[in-house]
Length: 445
Image (cartoon, rainbow, N blue to C red; front, side, top):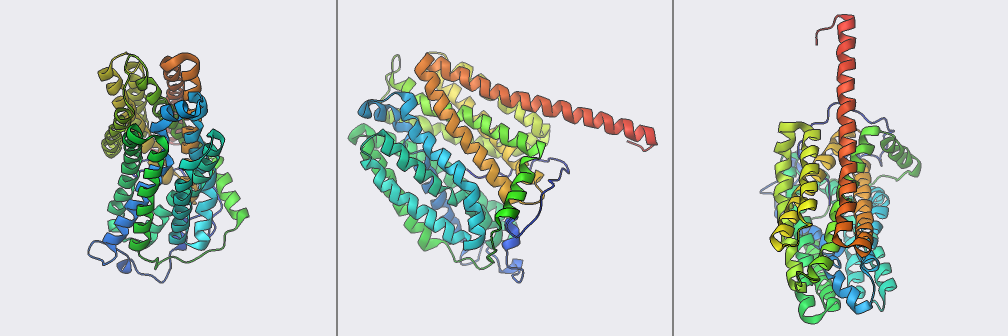
């Protein structure tokens, strides 16, 4: 999921990193192109571009989390525990996390459109092979490679938009791509749940593969050729300097950690929730468990509202709200009542998306150079959090039931709270030191 732009203010902090042709996606824009030549509403290619990236986002996230709603069925069929089956999700997100930075660099050399096309094609081919995995080892291996292939989509889509779309139309274009992400993540889980109830988990995965194939074909036919991209040589040394600069920056590292911790909670909860609801006292069917993911719509609303929340409370204030909401949802979900569990999931989802939006938007505003790599590092940490959360959440569930998963989630959200408290105290100390300095030299505050 690409970082959301919530218009959060992060001050005038700068990252000390070496700039290079491969360190900033905007440097690959053709300098001879005019903004008036870029796509905007009314341009013949604008609608095609938006629909193409919507289908790419839909396919990406339908495939990435395609096994998540099916984990109880996979466990039963392959006779494995929840913590073992959960790796069919964690392997895909971990593969994406490892590949997103290298593929973002390769897109600078070979082009955004080419990278997205190849990535989506490889991921779809693997999706059509995944249903035939003979055992869990093959399933996990195929899913890991599929996740790595999918990394080329978020690594390139935002750069393509920034180069080909008029700045005044950019927010709307990004919004539809992000909508495709959320709709894909939700619909993939719902489709697999309903299909699995009738024909089993393998047919459900095949159905998602066919849906992704149609999306890939539509994407290729619809996406206009890039007209404002200039290839740049990829310098591994310059890229390493840029990444090292970002990773040595305390503020960026805190934002990466917050994104990872929020995703640890979210990944753990949604990986394990199917196991809880299929068992007593609930005993829900696979189709009803898949329908639970309609709650993702809450995240769309929460993400959109985060901008106003940041404007009113500041970034750290918004993070405190997100932490509190997520923690309240975890505790509420402990009750053995369907309404309580659903309400808990709503709060967890709203809190997660608010925290993710606040942290991810701050990354792009904090990094003054190498923004593409700063965003890629956030995505890497974010999906590592998803992998860790899915694995630990399932392990905790196997050891101590739903209460163990909730305890794991509370530890992670407590970590995000601790980082935010530290940042708050540090900012206050810096303000006091600055006020004292001004008073000492006689400068008005």
